[in-house]
Image 1 (tube, one colour):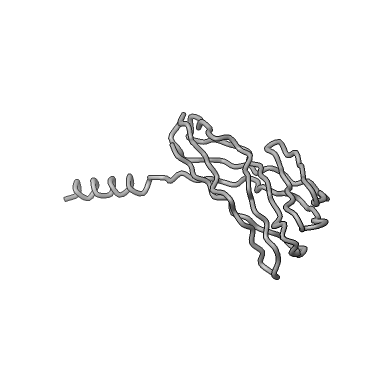
Image 2: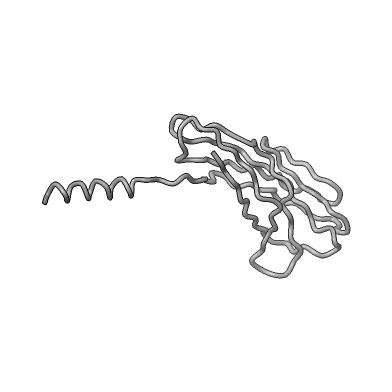
Amino acid sequence: MSRLLFLTLLSVWFLYSTVEAEVIVDEPLSFGTFAIINNSSVSTISISTNDRASRTRDIQILYIGQAARLRLVNYPPFTRLFISPVLPQQSTVFVGTTEQFTLSQVDMPDSIITDSLGEASLRVGGTLETSGNGGSYIDTTYNLTLMLTINY
């Protein structure tokens, strides 16, 4: 009877020791602080993986943002992970009514190889677009969720 109990506990331990792969955000992607001079046509602001900022048309950069730093953990060791963003993504705000931004491009590698621990790190930049429809943006924080598909 005690032998059966030991085997049962051992199998439960293995069942609960399974760890799922995850993405840890060490530093979120930030586009910094910027002003929209005119929203009558689509303007963009971009942050590269090496934290370089660029803009088009009617955006004025006040404070430069930074690329995201992500860690992929609990994957198989020495495995190529194929990463693709789900685009486009729309921003959200928690107060007021305003135009929204669109995350239209993401700057990151298409694939990365995990180390001996099953981990990999990468930096992610991106491009935001204004609506370009003449509507107004309020002075607030705009939030975006970047969804990634990771295959291996």
